[in-house]
Image (cartoon, rainbow, N blue to C red; front, side, top):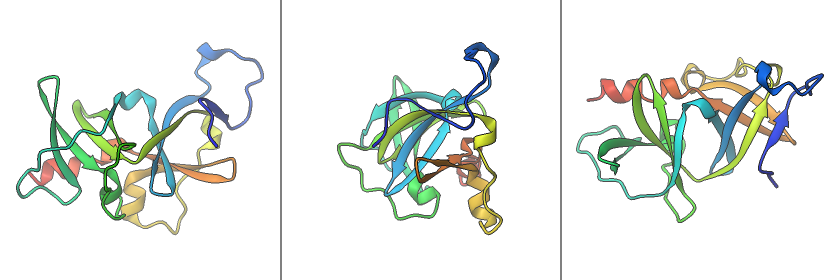
Length: 164
Protein backbone atom coordinates (compact mmCIF):
# COMPACT_ATOMS: atom_id res chain seq x y z
CA UNK A 1 0.00 0.00 0.00
CA UNK A 2 1.27 3.44 -0.81
CA UNK A 3 0.21 6.78 0.46
CA UNK A 4 -0.02 10.05 -1.36
CA UNK A 5 3.06 11.41 0.40
CA UNK A 6 5.72 9.59 2.45
CA UNK A 7 8.67 10.92 4.41
CA UNK A 8 11.78 8.75 4.54
CA UNK A 9 14.85 9.13 6.70
CA UNK A 10 15.35 10.80 10.03
CA UNK A 11 12.54 13.17 11.00
CA UNK A 12 13.52 16.80 11.07
CA UNK A 13 13.98 18.33 14.54
CA UNK A 14 11.49 21.02 13.63
CA UNK A 15 9.32 21.35 10.59
CA UNK A 16 11.11 24.15 8.75
CA UNK A 17 10.16 23.19 5.22
CA UNK A 18 11.99 26.17 3.78
CA UNK A 19 15.40 24.90 4.95
CA UNK A 20 15.67 22.28 2.20
CA UNK A 21 16.44 19.33 4.49
CA UNK A 22 14.87 16.85 2.09
CA UNK A 23 14.16 16.22 -1.55
CA UNK A 24 10.96 15.16 -3.25
CA UNK A 25 10.89 12.19 -5.59
CA UNK A 26 8.27 10.73 -7.93
CA UNK A 27 8.04 6.98 -7.32
CA UNK A 28 6.90 4.59 -10.04
CA UNK A 29 6.78 0.91 -10.89
CA UNK A 30 8.43 -1.12 -13.59
CA UNK A 31 7.11 -4.64 -13.24
CA UNK A 32 7.40 -5.57 -9.57
CA UNK A 33 10.23 -3.13 -8.87
CA UNK A 34 9.95 0.41 -7.61
CA UNK A 35 12.08 3.31 -8.82
CA UNK A 36 11.98 7.09 -8.46
CA UNK A 37 13.24 10.27 -10.09
CA UNK A 38 13.88 13.69 -8.61
CA UNK A 39 10.68 15.72 -8.86
CA UNK A 40 12.70 18.74 -10.03
CA UNK A 41 13.45 16.94 -13.32
CA UNK A 42 9.77 16.06 -13.90
CA UNK A 43 7.78 18.44 -16.11
CA UNK A 44 4.54 16.46 -16.22
CA UNK A 45 3.02 13.00 -15.96
CA UNK A 46 0.66 11.95 -18.72
CA UNK A 47 -1.26 8.87 -19.70
CA UNK A 48 0.12 6.45 -22.24
CA UNK A 49 0.02 7.67 -25.83
CA UNK A 50 1.19 5.29 -28.56
CA UNK A 51 4.50 6.48 -29.97
CA UNK A 52 5.50 6.67 -33.62
CA UNK A 53 8.47 4.32 -34.16
CA UNK A 54 11.75 5.76 -35.41
CA UNK A 55 13.73 3.65 -37.92
CA UNK A 56 17.11 2.41 -36.61
CA UNK A 57 16.51 3.84 -33.13
CA UNK A 58 18.02 1.97 -30.17
CA UNK A 59 15.81 -0.86 -28.88
CA UNK A 60 14.95 1.09 -25.73
CA UNK A 61 13.50 4.03 -27.71
CA UNK A 62 9.78 3.41 -28.08
CA UNK A 63 9.42 6.21 -30.65
CA UNK A 64 8.27 9.82 -30.51
CA UNK A 65 5.05 11.62 -29.59
CA UNK A 66 3.76 15.12 -30.25
CA UNK A 67 3.75 17.13 -27.03
CA UNK A 68 2.06 20.46 -27.76
CA UNK A 69 3.91 20.80 -31.05
CA UNK A 70 7.27 19.46 -29.85
CA UNK A 71 8.65 16.07 -30.85
CA UNK A 72 9.28 14.11 -27.65
CA UNK A 73 11.38 10.92 -27.68
CA UNK A 74 9.94 8.15 -25.49
CA UNK A 75 12.40 5.90 -23.66
CA UNK A 76 11.12 2.53 -22.45
CA UNK A 77 12.84 2.73 -19.07
CA UNK A 78 12.50 -1.01 -18.46
CA UNK A 79 14.36 -1.77 -21.69
CA UNK A 80 16.93 0.97 -20.96
CA UNK A 81 17.67 -0.67 -17.60
CA UNK A 82 18.07 -4.10 -19.18
CA UNK A 83 14.64 -5.52 -18.27
CA UNK A 84 12.12 -6.91 -20.78
CA UNK A 85 10.38 -4.21 -22.83
CA UNK A 86 7.24 -2.66 -21.37
CA UNK A 87 3.92 -3.81 -22.80
CA UNK A 88 1.88 -0.59 -22.34
CA UNK A 89 -1.51 -0.88 -20.65
CA UNK A 90 -4.20 1.61 -19.64
CA UNK A 91 -2.25 2.20 -16.39
CA UNK A 92 1.05 2.93 -18.15
CA UNK A 93 2.25 6.51 -17.97
CA UNK A 94 4.84 8.74 -19.55
CA UNK A 95 6.91 10.80 -17.13
CA UNK A 96 8.02 13.87 -19.09
CA UNK A 97 11.44 14.84 -17.78
CA UNK A 98 14.12 17.39 -18.62
CA UNK A 99 17.79 16.53 -18.70
CA UNK A 100 20.56 18.72 -20.06
CA UNK A 101 18.03 21.10 -21.63
CA UNK A 102 16.23 18.33 -23.55
CA UNK A 103 12.75 17.01 -22.85
CA UNK A 104 12.07 13.29 -23.13
CA UNK A 105 9.48 10.83 -21.88
CA UNK A 106 10.01 7.79 -19.66
CA UNK A 107 7.54 4.97 -20.25
CA UNK A 108 6.77 3.27 -16.91
CA UNK A 109 4.06 0.91 -15.67
CA UNK A 110 2.48 3.28 -13.12
CA UNK A 111 3.29 6.21 -10.85
CA UNK A 112 2.87 5.10 -7.25
CA UNK A 113 3.83 7.90 -4.86
CA UNK A 114 5.50 11.21 -4.11
CA UNK A 115 8.28 10.70 -1.55
CA UNK A 116 10.13 13.16 0.64
CA UNK A 117 13.56 11.84 1.61
CA UNK A 118 16.43 13.19 3.62
CA UNK A 119 19.93 12.94 2.22
CA UNK A 120 20.90 10.30 4.79
CA UNK A 121 18.11 7.97 3.58
CA UNK A 122 19.75 7.62 0.17
CA UNK A 123 22.59 5.09 0.02
CA UNK A 124 24.99 4.55 -2.88
CA UNK A 125 24.35 1.59 -5.19
CA UNK A 126 25.82 -1.66 -3.81
CA UNK A 127 29.43 -2.46 -4.75
CA UNK A 128 28.27 -5.63 -6.49
CA UNK A 129 26.19 -3.61 -8.96
CA UNK A 130 27.63 -3.57 -12.46
CA UNK A 131 29.00 -0.37 -13.95
CA UNK A 132 26.02 -0.47 -16.32
CA UNK A 133 23.61 -0.44 -13.34
CA UNK A 134 25.58 2.25 -11.50
CA UNK A 135 25.35 4.44 -14.60
CA UNK A 136 21.56 4.66 -14.17
CA UNK A 137 21.06 4.26 -10.40
CA UNK A 138 22.09 7.28 -8.34
CA UNK A 139 21.19 5.62 -5.03
CA UNK A 140 18.98 3.16 -3.18
CA UNK A 141 16.69 3.61 -0.18
CA UNK A 142 14.59 1.35 2.04
CA UNK A 143 10.88 2.19 2.20
CA UNK A 144 8.51 0.15 4.34
CA UNK A 145 10.38 -3.10 3.65
CA UNK A 146 10.91 -2.36 -0.07
CA UNK A 147 13.97 -1.12 -1.89
CA UNK A 148 13.49 1.93 -4.12
CA UNK A 149 16.20 2.95 -6.62
CA UNK A 150 16.75 6.60 -7.59
CA UNK A 151 17.26 6.87 -11.36
CA UNK A 152 19.92 9.26 -12.69
CA UNK A 153 17.84 10.89 -15.44
CA UNK A 154 20.90 12.72 -16.79
CA UNK A 155 22.33 9.37 -17.88
CA UNK A 156 19.23 8.04 -19.65
CA UNK A 157 19.52 10.29 -22.69
CA UNK A 158 23.20 10.77 -23.69
CA UNK A 159 23.42 7.39 -25.42
CA UNK A 160 20.22 8.25 -27.24
CA UNK A 161 22.00 11.28 -28.76
CA UNK A 162 25.07 9.18 -29.65
CA UNK A 163 22.86 6.70 -31.52
CA UNK A 164 21.47 9.39 -33.84
